[in-house]
Image (cartoon, rainbow, N blue to C red):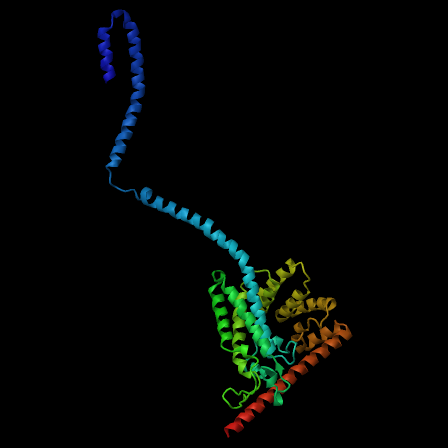
Length: 395
């Protein structure tokens, strides 16, 4: 508007000779003004809108609440993934194999303890390894098995003079288990609640008994007079052995959930599946393991045979024929014991095995069974003698 007034005023003051030039300038000015006026109006509108928004007290929930919260959550998630989840995953991937090795060691040591309780002689495995593996042992079985075990040499008296001394060995094995559990608990943030609970139960079971006093003398003179235990054997530990035997079963349930490529864990998993009639799953796992393993697959194939034998007798015998031609049956006799209960299968084994090897196998089976029955008989006699002695004392 001001520009227009100045233009009119200049027309009146400027001489006529310059009128043409002025008209030209005037036209250019009008054109420029027409071109800029829309932009000026837009700017004016924007300024008015800004001023209106400053005095507008209403809230836009999407822009002012949801978007800021969403951005905060997203940034927090990214921070958690980068600085917590990924480092935790890396730590777990390094620690879990070691933890699972220790859990497996504890499981194996408990197995050695149970086997020791049922052993018939020093430095040898028991004749009850099948019952132990399949969790078929009862409290009475452990009671009987411990009748020929003593704390130390001073307890080798009367009919218990031929007992096996295992007090110090039991102490060492229990201390090893305790040490492993303590070490695992250093990494409790990497343990599941089930793992913590079963390890704590094992820990408590080991502390119920004073295994460190394995040198305690048979004749106790601490109170001024000589006294001896009524039972010189370790049968009083049957409750301890039965408790850790059951806890071993709980521990194995945890181990079979592991995804670690560990053969020992694989064997535990397969035995568990077989004993719980999950044969289809076991066969699927076995076939995959045989396909992927780079080592000798003979052992895995024997396990496959033992499971197939339960559900597919025809194909299991085809596999058995291959195995009998490629391996020594004495080394894998544990997978054939149940087969001899069937007459036809027994004949099949005899026909497809070297005669000398077959005879050795039969002799070995007979020897093991005779040792097993001998242990049961001798330990039962010791148990009955204690019961008789106890009844006489009551009368």
